[in-house]
Length: 183
Image (tube, rainbow, N blue to C red; front, side):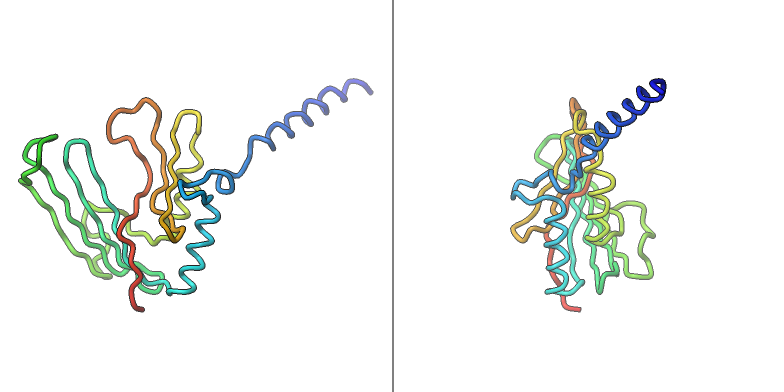
Protein backbone atom coordinates (compact mmCIF):
# COMPACT_ATOMS: atom_id res chain seq x y z
CA UNK A 1 0.00 0.00 0.00
CA UNK A 2 2.86 2.39 0.76
CA UNK A 3 4.43 1.75 -2.68
CA UNK A 4 1.92 3.94 -4.51
CA UNK A 5 1.89 6.88 -2.04
CA UNK A 6 5.26 8.30 -3.10
CA UNK A 7 4.37 8.47 -6.84
CA UNK A 8 1.01 10.06 -5.96
CA UNK A 9 2.73 12.61 -3.74
CA UNK A 10 5.23 13.47 -6.52
CA UNK A 11 2.38 13.84 -9.03
CA UNK A 12 0.51 16.14 -6.63
CA UNK A 13 3.55 18.39 -6.04
CA UNK A 14 4.35 18.53 -9.79
CA UNK A 15 0.76 19.52 -10.60
CA UNK A 16 0.81 22.34 -8.05
CA UNK A 17 4.18 23.60 -9.31
CA UNK A 18 3.01 23.60 -12.93
CA UNK A 19 -0.17 25.47 -12.05
CA UNK A 20 1.85 28.19 -10.34
CA UNK A 21 4.12 28.54 -13.41
CA UNK A 22 1.20 28.94 -15.79
CA UNK A 23 0.23 32.47 -14.77
CA UNK A 24 -1.55 34.12 -17.70
CA UNK A 25 0.79 36.92 -18.78
CA UNK A 26 -2.04 38.57 -20.75
CA UNK A 27 -3.59 39.37 -17.37
CA UNK A 28 -0.41 40.31 -15.53
CA UNK A 29 2.15 42.00 -17.83
CA UNK A 30 1.34 45.70 -18.13
CA UNK A 31 2.05 48.38 -20.71
CA UNK A 32 3.62 51.68 -19.73
CA UNK A 33 0.04 53.03 -19.40
CA UNK A 34 -0.67 50.38 -16.78
CA UNK A 35 -2.97 48.31 -18.98
CA UNK A 36 -2.65 44.55 -19.37
CA UNK A 37 -3.00 42.90 -22.76
CA UNK A 38 -6.55 41.79 -21.88
CA UNK A 39 -7.54 45.32 -20.83
CA UNK A 40 -6.12 46.70 -24.07
CA UNK A 41 -8.00 44.05 -26.07
CA UNK A 42 -11.23 45.00 -24.29
CA UNK A 43 -10.57 48.67 -25.13
CA UNK A 44 -9.96 47.74 -28.78
CA UNK A 45 -13.22 45.80 -28.99
CA UNK A 46 -15.11 48.70 -27.38
CA UNK A 47 -13.52 51.19 -29.80
CA UNK A 48 -14.56 49.03 -32.77
CA UNK A 49 -18.14 48.94 -31.53
CA UNK A 50 -18.17 52.74 -31.27
CA UNK A 51 -16.25 53.66 -34.44
CA UNK A 52 -16.87 50.66 -36.69
CA UNK A 53 -14.26 48.30 -38.03
CA UNK A 54 -12.78 50.53 -40.74
CA UNK A 55 -9.40 52.16 -40.23
CA UNK A 56 -5.87 52.60 -41.49
CA UNK A 57 -2.54 52.25 -39.72
CA UNK A 58 1.16 52.16 -40.47
CA UNK A 59 3.84 49.62 -39.63
CA UNK A 60 7.29 51.23 -39.49
CA UNK A 61 10.56 49.36 -39.82
CA UNK A 62 13.92 50.94 -38.99
CA UNK A 63 17.43 49.50 -39.06
CA UNK A 64 20.61 50.71 -37.40
CA UNK A 65 22.03 51.00 -40.94
CA UNK A 66 19.62 53.82 -41.76
CA UNK A 67 17.33 51.74 -43.94
CA UNK A 68 13.68 52.35 -43.19
CA UNK A 69 10.28 51.44 -44.52
CA UNK A 70 6.65 52.14 -43.79
CA UNK A 71 3.70 49.99 -44.76
CA UNK A 72 0.21 51.51 -44.64
CA UNK A 73 -2.68 49.08 -44.28
CA UNK A 74 -6.29 50.06 -44.94
CA UNK A 75 -9.11 47.98 -43.42
CA UNK A 76 -12.78 48.30 -44.33
CA UNK A 77 -15.44 46.45 -42.35
CA UNK A 78 -12.79 44.21 -40.81
CA UNK A 79 -11.16 43.24 -44.13
CA UNK A 80 -7.83 44.52 -45.47
CA UNK A 81 -8.52 46.32 -48.76
CA UNK A 82 -5.21 48.07 -49.49
CA UNK A 83 -1.49 48.03 -48.71
CA UNK A 84 1.03 50.75 -49.54
CA UNK A 85 4.77 50.47 -49.06
CA UNK A 86 7.71 52.84 -49.11
CA UNK A 87 11.31 52.05 -48.27
CA UNK A 88 14.34 54.29 -48.18
CA UNK A 89 17.98 53.30 -48.31
CA UNK A 90 20.65 55.88 -47.42
CA UNK A 91 23.82 56.29 -49.44
CA UNK A 92 26.04 55.67 -46.39
CA UNK A 93 24.88 53.80 -43.27
CA UNK A 94 24.93 55.81 -40.07
CA UNK A 95 25.29 59.24 -41.70
CA UNK A 96 22.71 61.94 -42.28
CA UNK A 97 20.84 60.19 -45.06
CA UNK A 98 20.76 61.22 -48.66
CA UNK A 99 18.57 58.49 -50.00
CA UNK A 100 19.87 56.69 -53.07
CA UNK A 101 17.14 54.09 -53.39
CA UNK A 102 13.44 54.15 -52.78
CA UNK A 103 10.93 51.38 -53.38
CA UNK A 104 7.23 52.18 -53.38
CA UNK A 105 4.06 50.38 -54.40
CA UNK A 106 0.33 50.41 -53.82
CA UNK A 107 -1.81 47.27 -53.77
CA UNK A 108 -5.60 47.29 -53.98
CA UNK A 109 -7.82 44.47 -52.76
CA UNK A 110 -7.26 42.28 -55.83
CA UNK A 111 -3.47 42.81 -55.73
CA UNK A 112 -2.85 42.24 -52.01
CA UNK A 113 0.30 40.24 -51.38
CA UNK A 114 1.71 40.55 -54.89
CA UNK A 115 4.82 42.42 -53.73
CA UNK A 116 7.66 40.85 -51.75
CA UNK A 117 8.36 43.67 -49.32
CA UNK A 118 6.16 45.23 -46.69
CA UNK A 119 4.37 44.39 -43.48
CA UNK A 120 2.05 41.43 -43.38
CA UNK A 121 -1.50 41.95 -44.54
CA UNK A 122 -3.20 41.96 -41.14
CA UNK A 123 -5.96 43.65 -39.20
CA UNK A 124 -5.46 45.01 -35.69
CA UNK A 125 -7.36 41.94 -34.47
CA UNK A 126 -4.66 39.78 -36.12
CA UNK A 127 -1.97 41.75 -34.29
CA UNK A 128 -3.71 41.28 -30.95
CA UNK A 129 -3.75 37.53 -31.64
CA UNK A 130 -0.05 37.54 -32.59
CA UNK A 131 0.77 39.48 -29.45
CA UNK A 132 -0.82 36.92 -27.15
CA UNK A 133 0.31 33.80 -29.02
CA UNK A 134 3.74 34.67 -30.47
CA UNK A 135 5.31 37.49 -28.52
CA UNK A 136 4.13 37.50 -24.91
CA UNK A 137 4.73 33.76 -24.72
CA UNK A 138 8.54 33.80 -25.04
CA UNK A 139 10.86 33.06 -22.13
CA UNK A 140 10.98 36.18 -19.92
CA UNK A 141 14.33 35.18 -18.46
CA UNK A 142 16.11 35.45 -21.83
CA UNK A 143 14.00 38.15 -23.48
CA UNK A 144 12.80 41.64 -22.63
CA UNK A 145 9.06 41.89 -23.31
CA UNK A 146 7.42 45.02 -24.70
CA UNK A 147 3.75 46.00 -24.57
CA UNK A 148 2.74 49.57 -25.38
CA UNK A 149 -0.66 51.18 -25.75
CA UNK A 150 -1.78 54.62 -26.84
CA UNK A 151 -3.96 57.06 -24.89
CA UNK A 152 -7.11 55.15 -25.92
CA UNK A 153 -5.66 51.89 -24.63
CA UNK A 154 -5.13 50.39 -28.09
CA UNK A 155 -1.98 48.35 -28.68
CA UNK A 156 0.88 50.19 -30.39
CA UNK A 157 3.65 47.65 -29.88
CA UNK A 158 4.02 44.12 -28.64
CA UNK A 159 7.13 42.02 -28.89
CA UNK A 160 10.41 41.03 -27.36
CA UNK A 161 14.12 41.63 -27.62
CA UNK A 162 16.52 38.80 -26.84
CA UNK A 163 18.93 39.75 -24.06
CA UNK A 164 22.51 40.50 -25.13
CA UNK A 165 21.50 41.23 -28.71
CA UNK A 166 23.20 44.20 -30.34
CA UNK A 167 21.42 45.31 -33.53
CA UNK A 168 17.93 45.02 -35.03
CA UNK A 169 16.85 42.46 -32.43
CA UNK A 170 13.25 43.46 -31.70
CA UNK A 171 10.73 40.83 -32.76
CA UNK A 172 7.14 41.90 -32.75
CA UNK A 173 4.76 44.52 -34.00
CA UNK A 174 4.78 48.28 -33.99
CA UNK A 175 1.74 50.28 -35.06
CA UNK A 176 1.66 54.03 -35.66
CA UNK A 177 -0.60 56.67 -37.21
CA UNK A 178 -3.80 54.73 -36.56
CA UNK A 179 -6.93 56.47 -37.92
CA UNK A 180 -10.58 55.53 -38.02
CA UNK A 181 -12.09 55.84 -41.50
CA UNK A 182 -15.63 56.07 -42.82
CA UNK A 183 -17.27 52.77 -43.69
